[in-house]
Image (cartoon, rainbow over all chains, first blue to last red; front, side, top):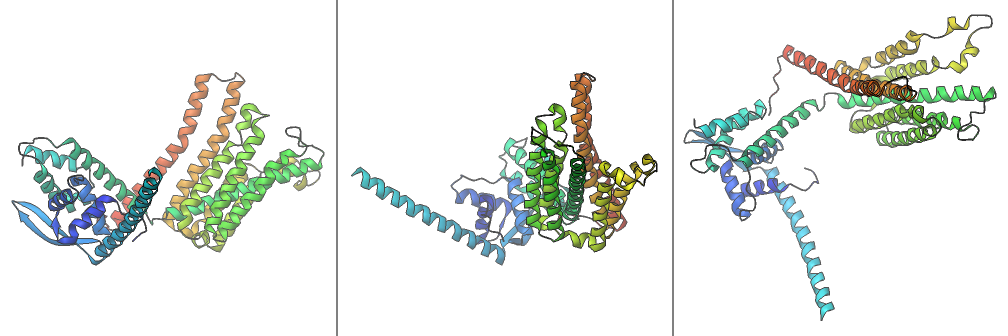
Length: 115
Length: 339
């Protein structure tokens, strides 16, 4: 694990897998739903992230199914993946808290100046 | 198989074989699931995404295969050799200058007596310090001192540029060598200590090779080592002693580094040597052209060929290394897969 902030697609893929194991297309759909359609992962980006996360041991294959003659592989979060997602979530929350506090302070100052 | 699937499969060829074996069927399923009914050709955004991700996977794999295969060791050794030769060149020029100074030459530059000695004096201080730090394993200090060496070489270029017009570019080779040494030491900063790559004997041989190159190029000392009454030209070191003997000694110094590191040192050293050689030649070429002895087109073609030489040497060397490694892998029955 590094101190480098996680990239958004990685964070979203881990978040999609935090609830339950999902196959590739289900991850794309869940990420689109989570972000209100703002992020729609494409296959190349998704599988680059899945391959890297598997190599880093943050996700693993849960099971494989064949649906309409097509391979469907389900992925799930590992313990290391859960830890990594928790760390990143805490980091984002801490940053959001600071940003929120400063915005409140700014609004109070500006409000004070205008009255 | 539909036309759309066939086209997606064609696009997937941009991925390395290992990645395709692991993910192609799954990815095709995802791509077809996301395609609206009736689509015959891949969406441009999907196609671009596949090409980008595929090329990234290929580059990442190539980088991964090269990691831990001795490039850092080779960079450290090549940089040490080059720093040793720079130190030797500085000491050589300083001694030659001091001898001339002793013989009454004012060594005047920019109207200041003795200023010519500033060039070799600075080089004599900085490059041996770089070598010492590298030998002691102080890797970050080595890089910092090498940066100081680059600054010294830049000052040297500045010193000579004003009074000598095109010939003033001659010391540019030293600046280029300094930058290359710094880059190589920076690459090697997370690698092994250079002493553990070469061993104590290898280090001693490396110092000996650089000393041999420096001593045999000391024209100002000719009179000192030729016995009275003997023909001086007979004792003049020839090309074999000046060039090939140091190269052989330096090659012997790499003996303990292992075959693959040795080959990488050979490729990096040959490239660096060619860069320096070319940059020593190009200012001369410009100078000849300025005197009107060479046409503009001839000068440009000469410079182009010269500047391409290091690229050809590096590319050729990497190609040969790749072929040798493939042959060795086949010999050992190894198969490198993506995962």
